[in-house]
Length: 351
Image (spheres, rainbow, N blue to C red):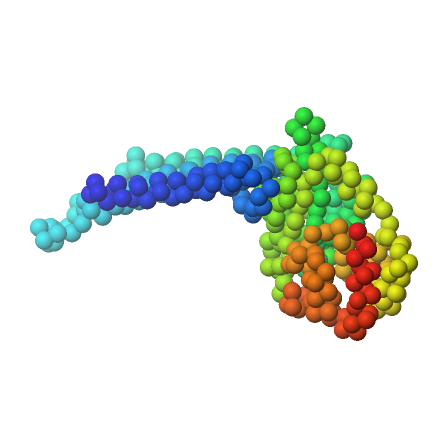
């Protein structure tokens, strides 16, 4: 009996040890190399993410204690009151009620639920009702099948798939507040290290915020099934120092480069289906169905993070999108080699 009880208790302790070890490993990895890119809830780097993490650990500890107690009592009952040859013809003692026991298994669960409710409500209130300071950065995030559009109303910037925000210094907080919209179907915005999941629902604006505590790159993705390429609707958040963020804003506010050496490629862009979906500042291209390409080559990835932004990958993406992202809504352009070369030369100037 003692051996079985100890085994159950040991199992519960091992589960708790695994959870805390996961947290410690993630934290140690980040401390050893802050540039390490993780998608882990166990390494929060923002106030909302830290609040959610603390609540999760609190709930896990309570449920682990319940697990230990219930299974200890279960094993005890199975062993102590098991049938045997000596008592197979006898009926066990009949207990018709115990006020003390009935009060205990009624009041204790109610108290547990109340505690969990109050802790959860407190966290939800702290995150959802946080005031927006004057220094906050406003971003409108729009989910599309299967990419992200980011608009910075105060700066007049439109970009795609890679969100740039400033680090938030506790002495001078600079949180980023996002307004979440959907252009087509349900999506969900989730960067595990920076904030919890928040849905983007058509005709129902939503909001969230984050205040990263360190610079670096943080990964996430759409967390709501939205179609064939949901799994490759990735997110990349670059948290910059105040100086780097200001420099990025200045660069993004510049119009597209006008280089006469690539005028042929620009004509290819403006006379094919590219112009119907994409926009490039300073040109006739004002499409909104696809990402804004004004500063295309300043991004690290294409196809919403599905491929690195290299000449070879970009060329393949234009000619055969399904080779990178099967089921994407980007059409295969089927350009001649000469037109594709000219178009590539033009796109590579959009920095």
